[in-house]
Amino acid sequence: MKFQNFNNIDKTIIMNKIFINALLIFSLLILFFALVGCGASGPAIEDPFNANLPLLPPTTPEEDFVRFQNNCVKNVEKQVNNLSNGGEKLCLEAQNGFSGLEYTIELFNYNPIGIENHFQGIVRKGGYIYLSGSDQNSGQARIWVGQVSGYKEENQVLSSNIKSENSSINYYNYNTDDKIIKGINVTIEPSWHVGGLSLLGDLLAVPVEEYRESEGYDLYSSVLFFDVRDSANPRLIKKANILSRPGRDAGSSFLHRLADGRFIVGLGTTHINNNYLDIYVSKTTNIQDGFQEQPLPIPQVELSNIVRSQGMGMVVDCDTKENYLIVTDTEGGGTITRDGIYSATNLLRLYKLTFHKENPDIDNSPIVRVHSEDRGQKMLEVININAYSHFAAAAGIVTNKNNELLILASNHYRFYNLRAPTKRIIKVKEYRGSL
Image 1 (tube, rainbow, N blue to C red):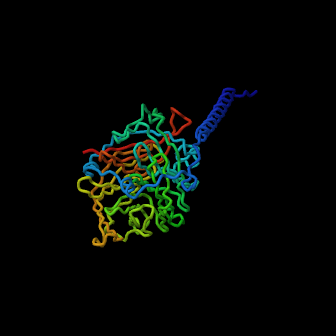
Image 2: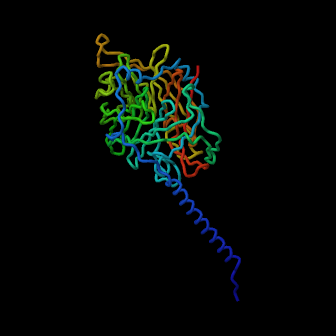
Image 3: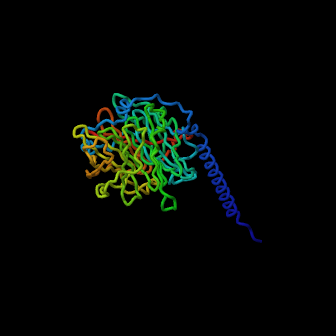
């Protein structure tokens, strides 16, 4: 008579039960995270072209000349060299203006490694942060308005709002009054990818592009201009003739005013004859009259030393009155996909730009010439997926009334927070120059 090996049978039954239970637990986790990620959606995205939006009170050209200006910076080159790695770290609650797992790299996101679904530009006006991002899947380009409750007008800088954290387990205890308060749809078909933002006092420039030339798409970009005098409620300057650029991309931007009061908008590009910068001049000193249709005819040799950038901004030295272009990016790559297998170094480069008229004896000379001078680069800290800043994502230039230089940056994505599992956060960091 043959006897069955009950020990082996028992082991098989036990292993099957363990497998079934593990599968059940895994399925429950999938359901939990899906519900957590999708359970809280923000309010409807605002349409800036909506004719029913409240209008801003009219202003005079004299008032606009004052409010469409940035503060100068004391000793630009020294402040750049003295930028500290420390910086002020903040978390912003990021539910309003988002749906489900958008702008995350979580396991159950439909776009889990975040490619073409990430933040790209950031600037700040006082206690309000403007952040841009894009989603290839939905074809949506957006900007968000964030409010930082702890901003103090007398200090002119941000202060950390984090009480405690453990990034290894995604635990963040922060001031939950600091949050994204709304989203704004800035899609201009066929453009869907927002580039780096720039701010000139109350004037916000938002470049939007279709750049996927290698995938068979035609290059196209547009630049929208917003009046942010009401910081919480940016209003599209509809008469400003949205700057349209068929055949050209626009991955970053800067704003500047010439001595004669006309506006300059510079646009970072990566596909035009290896020239990484286009510069447009406004038709008049009134922003509502729009810009010239074609960029300035600048010889490539004059801009050949300006490298590709993810963000940029222009500042003026208080003493010398010289113009400095600051461009930001990372050394070692773009989007990072998994903690521990990739790192990058935040860096910025500094250029001196000189604008002068082609015909200086003519007050309204329409031609402006530009000359650039490379002033070197500044390396900041090495970062990874959990960093509060990533210069290949969102980085912007901020100046304040104390004539300080500030670099504001964020990560590519929203993050899960173990302390509040139903909500997501955006990490932000502000670097401060010193004399």
